Length: 414
Ligand SMILES: CCCCC/C=C/CC(=O)SCCNC(=O)CCNC(=O)[C@H](O)C(C)(C)COP(=O)(O)OP(=O)(O)OC[C@H]1O[C@@H](n2cnc3c(N)ncnc32)[C@H](O)[C@@H]1OP(=O)(O)O
Image (cartoon, rainbow, N blue to C red):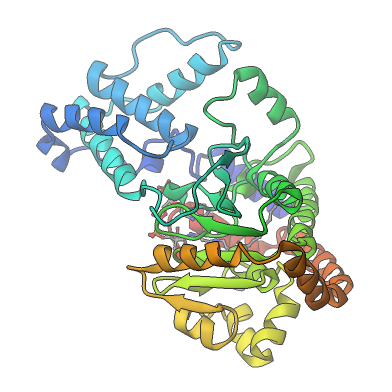
């Protein structure tokens, strides 16, 4: 364990782990094609940014700010704001981190980033339920209710909707609120728990989980493991196991029809929890991947119990031990997915169907779900507790540490 802590600390201090403020972390151009971006392209990108339909989140906005300053004023040449000038200091750090990147390269990177954001910022489908009620949210989770459906949408498209334990304040929140949320460690996992708890009591007969952009979700954000609390790796593993258990418990206990609208590939915990949903609709572009052994980790989301039950022990083993990635059709044939739709008509067909289902008598649906699920609940809670405990140990293992370091140093991808 000392080896783990030492290695993680060395990785951190040597800058081996990726930081959003480091030039390589942004995937920046430092020459070559950068020269091809004209001032006109840059001006167009500045205008294009204003047309984005989704807020790209604070991290991306910080990148854009830094690149804009570098592109228009060159390397950071203003005095560093004081420690208590929290916002301006963060902006200064981001700009300063670009070092001597040329104005032309900064322009190119700005244009590239805006075009990536424009491509992934999908306009809401006309078939999606009308949002007549929008709950308080962070930028990375959007909750809307309308047409009898509460929709919880994972909204970090530039990170493939990876689930972060970093604080994810809304762009609209004041700095005092940001600080209070830091103090209370509110994360995307907490936001989902809160959204499910609210949905369990709201008026919508049906609740949906879906994602923004091209992915449903790429699972746990692997950079979660890089922010060590004061208690070191052991404390990180302990608190993550508690959070994981609480998170999965909300799915086990959810009292109404819970539907996954899987709009693209799903990885890790976003696949395993599907066994706790009542219905799973998937686009034919979706894939289902649980690379736990590759990551030195072990199954969660009650999948060690639900997957063998759903698909038989040998198919479950191929997924959970060997990380076999299933196509949507395969996942459907194995019972994990209810129905697969062509990507071109996915949103239209799925939302039309859900709107029709939402008109069914809500109490009847709740009671039917209770009869189907209740006798399993005790077992599922026990499985969840055991899986969380096992993972707590796994997260402290060399196998896990090496796999995460490898991803973070960009050596590996699934
Ligand atoms: C409370 C704690 C509970 C913990 C519960 C445990 C759960 C276990 C799991 O969920 S295991 C699964 C973990 N997920 C992964 O291993 C996926 C890692 N990501 C990838 O392999 C790839 O990013 C990809 C295959 C999902 C997508 O590849 P693609 O080439 O299409 O896109 P990019 O890699 O360029 O991704 C765009 C940016 O998004 C970042 N990103 C994507 N997924 C994650 C992730 N899971 N964690 C951290 N970061 C992620 C990626 O790094 C890119 O960022 P960049 O633009 O800054 O480079």
